[in-house]
Image (tube, rainbow, N blue to C red; front, side, top):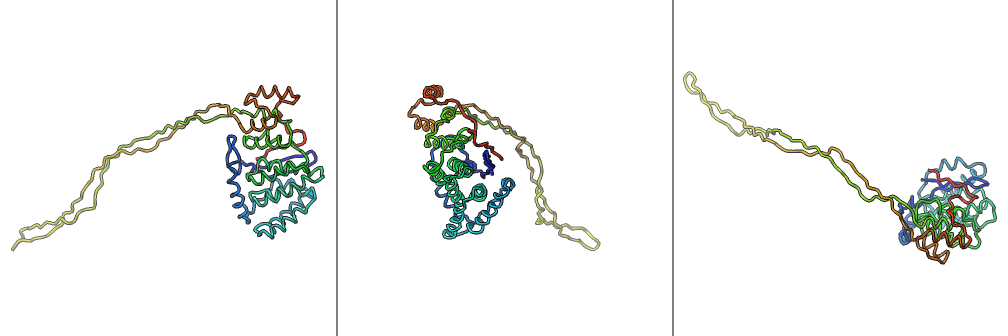
Length: 348
């Protein structure tokens, strides 16, 4: 599982990977969220596996020190002892204890313990992240908003993405949009980039409009043809097969002996031999030739966001979009940086 490592200016926070595309499949082009309707059933299926015990995130836990490490063990004990395999009542009681934790040092450990493939646990972390995001803590607040931003863009569950989006759009949540800009500029999946762009538009942040314009179309390599050349070797087989002997053939022989004639019955076996002549074909290797072509891919989802955000429609004409942005006094350049607050690294 990949890990999204987010370093803040005042500390280090680690969020287990929620790349959607990593869990749910490979999206190679813009697609609507209609397919996400299947996720509703998946949510129930995930929640029905309460005995799931995720692997220990050893590398991330090793970075925790002091109070954070202490909180990690406390949260882990609470989750594994009271939430794993619990019925709805017991789970609700344990979740309430979790949500009563207000120490900023507990947020990152919660992410490490709860953000797993278990949808119910991720839902609990979403609630905790929303509380922290709407707190006045100068460290936990922005970090929680960053977590919510990743959930809203990357989580495979349409329900949890919607919950994170609702939290980000709440008037009680501070407007920290740097993480969304990172997802817009750095994510390789068009559907995730479109989600990030849509959230920025909903938050009335047009500072990344230049990046959106740049991502209206992308250059990609597409497999156009594949030729397979197979080689075979032919062998002529010439052989004989001897069948079991036939012992039913008997004959009587006589011989003159002093005083008379002696007779004896003997068996003369007959063996049938079959001649085999055939040709055998066997594989002798193969060669595969690929034909690739560089194509320009249009992303209608990104165009829809730009139209909604600006009220204009210049289609996929990037120069026209940039000219209009400059005329409005906006920055039309692509921003590939992280925005100044976050130093974001993607670790495998």
